[in-house]
Length: 258
Image 1 (cartoon, rainbow, N blue to C red):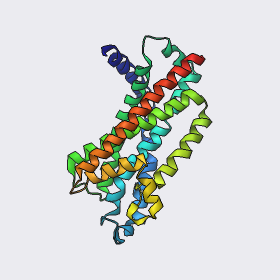
Image 2 (cartoon, helix red, strand yellow):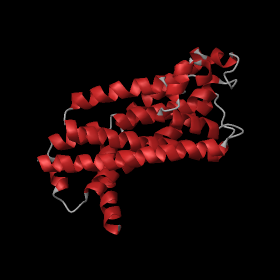
Image 3 (cartoon, rainbow, N blue to C red):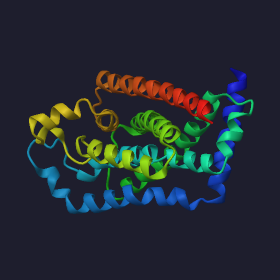
């Protein structure tokens, strides 16, 4: 166990050094959620006045949604850096090193989680400046970060597993695009499902993005339903565990093929 922690830490530091060399990527990943937050928050603020919407502040409603959307997109495309490592021969060198496959994956996922926590706090902070309110306070923000991390682990693992199996940038991009937008628009990222058709409400109940958004938004509200929040977090934890396991299997398949 100690060996796994040490190897994971070393690989995390390696990824962190690449960010220090190119810090602009951290800012680039923030552009889309911030544009959506400020643009939609301004253009559609009147939506909150619709009967049954559930809140009187649209920007407060979409703020956790923008955090989760950012996490989804970043996680789903995180396998791109793994393909770059494979093309440069870095992955083959790592696979013959003493580091276990679990450490390789956990190092990448730890880096993804930490950077997304920083970005999530920035998005929530800018949303607060723009008028969003978080009655749930610090605890609500912590639950939002937990939801973000679990979703990042799930889709980061999926993306890395696909990268190991497909090994082509365009293939991973195609799958990521195929998954992300439908998951966003069949969730409550931008709109209260209560105002949507019945079939969309049914679909959203099986959508992991909606689990994360709903748990985050509920935790940030004045009267959280902690039983419901716990249920969503357990679903996200189970999904993340399955995806991590599948990703380690993909490492084995990749190693057998090289």
